[in-house]
Image (cartoon, rainbow, N blue to C red):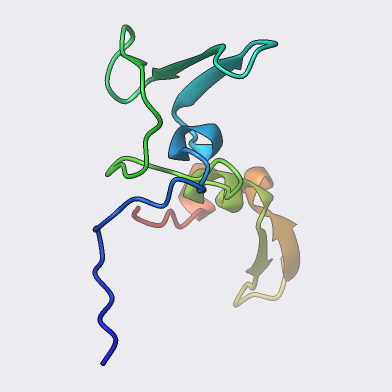
Length: 103
């Protein structure tokens, strides 16, 4: 019987979470050990001195936020009077015409 333990031993081959996190500022130098990591969630003066493998505030910067997705979305507008029908860019809609999703 094979048992998998979650949150057990860290896999040291994985890259640190901060390198792909939306809230991290990562500065790398020419040498392998030259790296400064600043976390904006922890505060303006929070410099991390170790590679982070788990974080409760991690957000992948490669994935757009809900606000960004709403800005690029196309909305199908329909009117009962038949005047305005068709696709419209969400950013061109007025505040009274938008339905904002809760995060």
